[in-house]
Length: 391
Figure 1 (tube, rainbow, N blue to C red):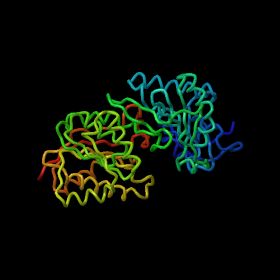
Figure 2: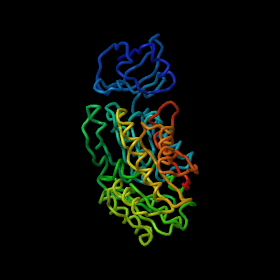
Figure 3: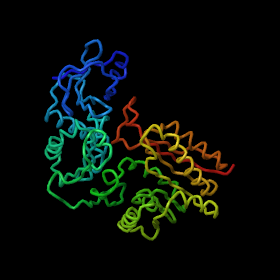
Figure 4: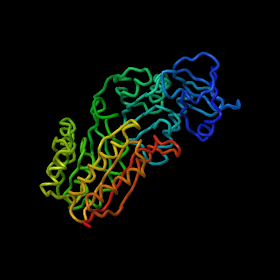
């Protein structure tokens, strides 16, 4: 087996558990380098570091799968998926969950989402893509699913020299499925929805609004398919307006509202949120609760400052629309923005809006997306509720 030897100065980072090895961290390679193949990795002093898959086309040259001298084969893949499922069952995520969360489940670049009896997978690197058949086989053995679909229509695959595509990995099925979450029903568009079709990572956070929305006039911005807004209506909001720039998302949000018999309380409009928030602030519109759940504003470190400026702008606009004593519910899924940076940005927005804020809740993604300390990409979602009062 090909052997990869690390430079001495980076050994502590790898030894402390991080699975990514960059090309400039490698001292030498002994043996042929075939993209996607399993290699053995050694520290600079010759001690065994682990096994992983290599890709010379990627900035991340090797992603470690195991720290043990063990074979990486179909049985290995099956065991890892089984371990991931056992963990979800222990913490109470079984009907709908992120079954495999990449590095956090020791399966770098693999995402598997479970929507009751249907599965969506993403193989985001060459090394894990080569095990796709084994992954499908394991899912069929463990779950006997009604269907498996791949959503590999993501640009990050191109960094690995892989094409973008999507399609069925089992016999075709209706890719519009209905899931249950917190006593509500939601349509999931597996084939064409964002990411894998639905944002499971906010499922716990959607319950966190339960008490603050009762009898409230609620505005939801970047609503996507209306999950937060429909939860607000379910929890007793007087009226709920959801905004999103996508006509398709708004159409699905309206379907979701009707699916739960909440179409008289919830309505959705397709508009540009940035334009609308600014204008409504000038118009003096007011709400009891404003909820902001924007998409990631950047995927590159070079644009972090621009992303923070965007977060500050929408949160400032949102706060100006909140009645004295109301609440702001705000999120960031940009993993390059740290929790500290996010909170500092909200604080700066409050100062500029001449508002006082008081933290109610600060949470991360749901526990089926476990966080590994030292791996920043696993600690990506910031969810905050603050009370907003006039100065």
